[in-house]
Structures are given as structure tokens and as C-alpha cells.
Length: 232
Image (tube, rainbow, N blue to C red; front, side):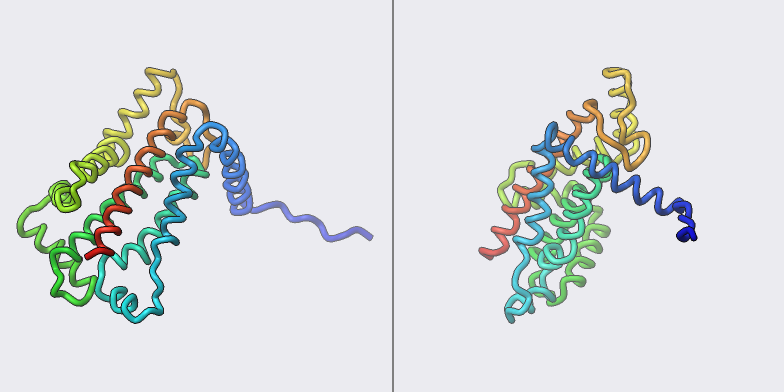
């Protein structure tokens, strides 16, 4: 008597196994060649836990409802921090920069919503008021970043990070220019421009180091904003 016949793996199983394999292969590569980026993203994921206040404390419970920045700490930073880590391991560098840009924009808007609408007692109303005001006054996100920088004394840190992330990694021409630059400079196409998930090559080292620096810049901005909020 023979045992049950082994069924062929499904396309779903094949894809899941491939994703797992790529992430396991990228982990030691990042440790050897881009530990600065790897460490910065792990630190950001840990920030998501470290900055979480105790929701059982009455004052914190009220803040949870009233503060847009508390909403950011509870419901924006943790999932985006985890998504950055997963994108990094899967070789999705553009995804990493997009997640970081989303986190940055969310932080600035939540901070400004609390700052400008102190008399509003629900965070969602604050955020809607901020968006409505920006629409009426035709205030760009860059202008919001500039207000944020000025209030926190950050020179142009928020504006510079926003501009770099947008122009270099989110806007279509920025991605095209990056691909073509690597083709001209290294006679190779970036692995992230081929398929995801994908194993890294040494040609991605510069971009990985850039990611590490951008995440570090964001963590500094985040710490300054939360420190200011706690003292207010």
C-alpha cells in the first residue's frame, strides 16, 4: 500500500514560497552591505511601539479622541513602520520611499491640525478643517511643511525631506530618471524596476544607503515633533 499522492503546489503556494525565500536571502545581504538602512528601519518600527502612550490612563484616553497626533502614533506609524520593514526585505525600494513619504505627510498634517484647531474636540474634525482650509487658501503641502519647520525651528528639514522623497521616488519622472541613471552608470537595470519581490544586487547599495539616511532624517523630525507636543 502506498501513501496518499502528493498534490502539486498551487500558484499561491509557489508565490508565498518565493516571497519567503527572497526575504530570507535579502536579510543577510542587508546585514552585510546596508546595515545602516536596515537598522534605521528597525529603529523606526520600534519607535512605533516606544511612542505609544498608555490608553488606559484617563488623560491618554481623552487625548486618543481629541488629538490628531495621537491618531498618528496609534494608527499610522505602527502599520507604516511594519510595511517599511516588509518592503525592505522584499526588495521593494520604491515602496519603502513611498511609505516613508506617507508617514512624513501624515505626521506634519496631524501636528498642524492639533496646533491650529485647539478648540476642536475630535481629531477627525481637526484634520478635515485643515484640509478644507488648505483647499480654500490654496495652501500646498510644501507650504504646510514650511509652517511645520518654522514652528519647530527645523530650518527646512521637513520641506527638504518631502521634496526629495516626492521628486526622486514618487513622481514618475523621478523613477524613470533613476532607472536610466543606473543604466548609463552601471549598464544595469535596478532590481526594483524588474519585479517584486527580488533579491538585491550590489548595484542597489547607494539607494539603500540613501533610504537609511532619509529614515534617520524622518526619525529626528518625528522625535522633535513628539517632544514639542509632550511639552505643550
